[in-house]
Length: 442
Image (cartoon, rainbow, N blue to C red):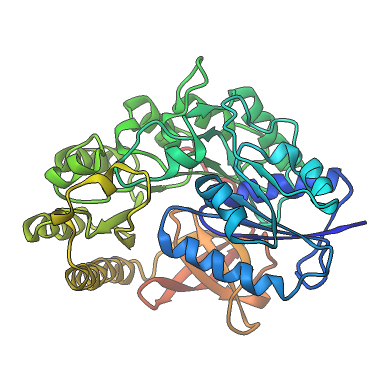
């Protein structure tokens, strides 16, 4: 069997797409290998959200050329492929395939053509494509990424996603439930529903709360997560479903991007600071103990000292359990790149603000984590810890990363642990019971 090696960069949606590609290629007679050396096909599934992600991929392509045989097919897939298109083919002479997120169905044929010297570009959008007949080859081990929505209609001024993944479209509820049942039959008990603004899901007959109820009721599912939602789409019925379905986990990743209403307006986020705070309050009122994490951008064009202070004060007021912080990265073709040049924030100011924000959010998270020592959590053991063989990494329902002794459980096991120590971001846990029971209604 010909072998295929695949590397994935970027978000969870890219991970899910990689699993779909591997499934399609397995059905076409390809064997997945975890080593690029001598592989018949090498694919790099890419991200285009920030420039450094693209530069990292370009560097990696150069490295991978050293692993190629004379007839190895090298392809670039995903958002970077969609964004750069022909330019990528022109610049990278050893690349034979440039394939966007809606063209994975044609991968086997494109690879066959490349083996005969054809170079292919496949970046047309297909607003009907959900890959329903694909059998994903899952490699996460204990959880399943399930795309329920593709594309985005929000068009925030800094974001490239609408231009690389097209307009928003939702899968049918019945298809998502069918895939969830398939996941259970494979022995997995946790699913993560994916979408660019996942809680705006609507298949024409129901809203996201209906989807949560349907997926959460599948026999054998113990945990339901979703990412990434938009604050505007947390309607009362959606929050009600989160509160009432016992398998839905007590964690929401709620991107804020800024704490300033004027900045949010320039970003075209379509909510105010007050609206975001109200959303958090409604989630916490309905779901006691819910963990709130977020995304924040610093250095967006025109960001003033006062607007940055608004972001710091939002972090303090909300008390995020964690935050992913980013420096603004201009993306060609997005409205933010057309803002007046005089609005560009100097690099030294961006770096200073980024450092200060990081200190604030890490300090808040550390304080909240220290306060939880001694509490008990159900955790799912996910993988070996990065360092040494004595620990395994587990995850609580409220998304705490917990290190447990390797001898206490196998990967895929559920445990109840007491949180006995923390580095500020990761806990150590002492098992107090094995095989935690199914969650009960809240």
